[in-house]
Length: 64
Image 1 (cartoon, rainbow, N blue to C red):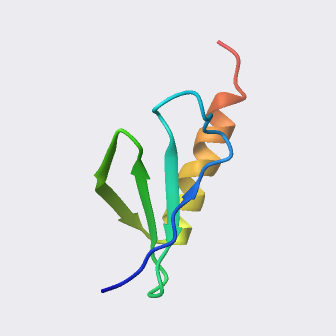
Image 2 (image 1 turned 120 degrees about the vertical axis):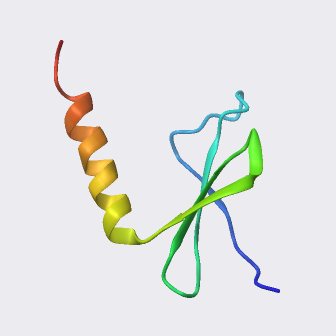
């Protein structure tokens, strides 16, 4: 069985139950899960995840 080492996002606080966890798999994929539903895991690769994070950051810097 594959052992995955999950790391909590630095943006997640200890006080809430809305923590995001990430894990790198040996095959090069990245896995994401939320603390409220840890059995539900999203798998992606680094490039699409990087594009998604960059889009979120650039969209968040705009003022309405």
